[in-house]
Length: 317
Image (cartoon, one colour):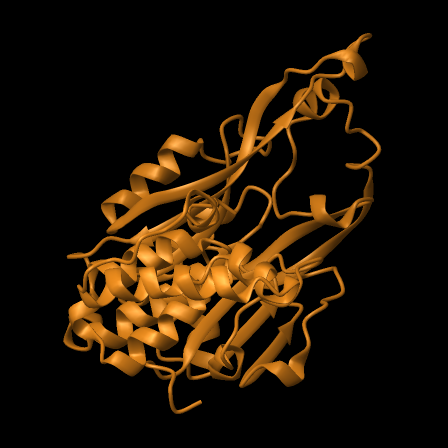
């Protein structure tokens, strides 16, 4: 625990139903405060693995107050917003969007959530809110949004809900607040047609989008302790499966860290292929690769790699 080069990590997961525990090493989860929020679904996180775990059935919105929440047959389609029925029919999703019930709910904002639980900031914000993602992020308000390091949001190229913004509108808003798009995982849907099941093409409808705060766009508080800020950002990238970008952050800011910090953070961003190879017993090749990596990080002459080692070293997850 004492080796971890940052203090507490604050994570908010909105629309957490079905999500599993984050796959990070080195006791990082014992530094994590996790608020897992879902209005209708059962959560699957293991509370004992986190420093603080808040399972909440609140409805988060961009503004506080009473609103109507629509519970659908498939819980993951439930939302404060009504779907566009012509798009529901376009993709043959009628059975998923059958209305189960309507609830009158008292919405809260992220700012209220943070203040209620006395959290100083949110480092990683994940939203899967069926059309409400940008409204929720904007409801964080400037003070807390300026402290956020990574945001994962479900954004649509073809807005599926009434009043939902387009992808490019959310992208512009986040860019103006100091974030850049680091990666996206697109979802392709096929329209419901006679030959639907035979088609191999489709339409990009939405994507899980990952935004990281740009270097130089940190708040005054984050900039004053840049070492811990970058270390938290590296840990979050590893948590959400972007170890390559985490390693880039480490190498780009290597001067901030002691040798012990470097070794720890290197273990956090170590490629999955290396972990699997360790389990398979290919230790000698891995020793050569790790020697090469350490040489790069500490500025020494890099070790030579065989062609097989080189391929393993450059595996993309």
